[in-house]
Length: 142
Image 1 (cartoon, rainbow, N blue to C red):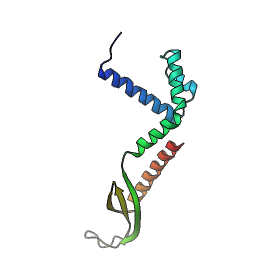
Image 2: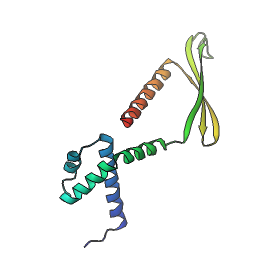
Image 3: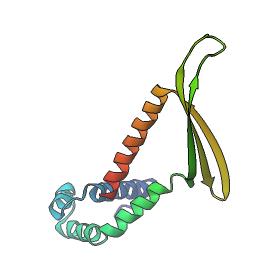
């Protein structure tokens, strides 16, 4: 009988966690789970499948909570203004619309103010990023 060293244990643990995450994330069925671990014995497949399916709601909630723990900062309030830059020190006439967004962020017990000034292109990039983030959140919810 072979004794595992610490690295072997970590490798097995990481592999199991990754497998369970994939099964929960993609909503695998009993057959899909069992087919994905074809190298295990019949009893081991059955136990693994029962554990994943019976605890899927708890596992999904745990994955969501881990995702939200990426940052403890939260948006409390925001304000925005539209401005028109008429000129700059380099150009006599610019006439470029600018959006100024003031964000009030709470991080732990501290409040922090962040101000962003964006032109049209930067605003479009930010909106695209928010839409992509929203899509990921919606996929995690389903």
